[in-house]
Length: 298
Image 1 (tube, rainbow, N blue to C red):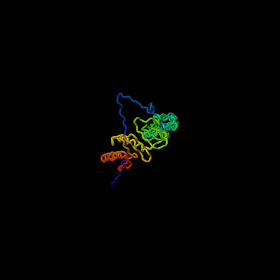
Image 2 (tube, rainbow, N blue to C red):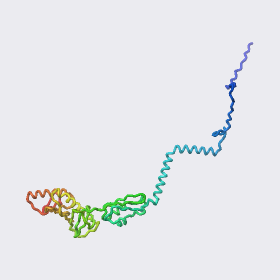
Image 3 (cartoon, helix red, strand yellow):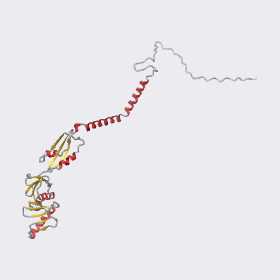
Image 4 (cartoon, rainbow, N blue to C red):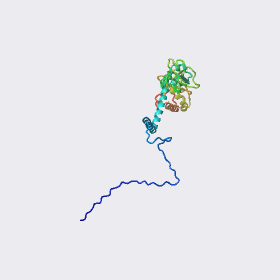
C-alpha cells in the first residue's frame, strides 16, 4: 500500500532589509550628530510653539499676503483720502475768502460806483457768484463790458471796458458825446473829425441814456460809403423819429435814407438817379430813398 504524504505549502516570508555591517575604513573617525541641539535659527525637533505666537505669525502671513494682492487698491484709497482731506481743508480754510479786490480799466467811471455793486467781500473763492457781480457792474452807463478772474488764494480782479466816444448827438440845444451803439457818455469832446447827428427831438439827455441806435448805425455807414458811391461827402446828418436819417452832401444834394437797412443799395440807387437826372436835365431838391428801388424825387 502506497501512502502519499502531503507536503506543507511553504509559508510566505515578508520582504525584509538585511543590514550587514561593513568594516569602517581604516583611519576614519566616528562623529555623532546630536539633532536635539538648537542652532541659532532652529529649535528642538518636535518642539511646539506657543499658541499665541503661532496665531500672531499666522495673522502676519495672511496680512502680508492680503497687502501684496491688493496694494493697488490700497494706494488708490490712500490717495483719494488725501485728496478728500485737502479739499475739505480748502473748502473751510479762511485763506480762500475774498479779501482783496482789484479794479482795472475804470477811467470815466468812479471806482466808488463800481464798489457799491460788488457783493464778493468775505465770500469763498470757490462758490462766489461772479456772474451776478458782472451783471450788476454792467448796468453802469459808461461800462461796455466786465470780466472777473480769481486771484488765488484770496482775491479777484475786475476788468472793465468803458464805452469809447464815437461822435456827437445834438438835441434840445445841447451837444452830447455818444458811442457807436448810441449810448450817451456826457458832454465831453468827441474825437476830432467825428460824425455829428442833429436830432429834432426836444428833451434833454443824461449819461447812460440811449438814442436811436438805428440812426447812429445808418449815419456811420453813410459817412463811410458815400464818397465811394457818389464821390462826395456828407456835411450834415439830421434825425427825425418819423423819417429817420436825412443827409446833405458837400455838392448840395439832400437825401432821406431812413434807417440803417440796405444803406449800400440805397446809395447805389441814389448814384443811378443822379446820372439819369443829369442826362434828362431833371432838377430836384430832395430824393427819398426809404423804399429802396422806388426813389421819390421832390
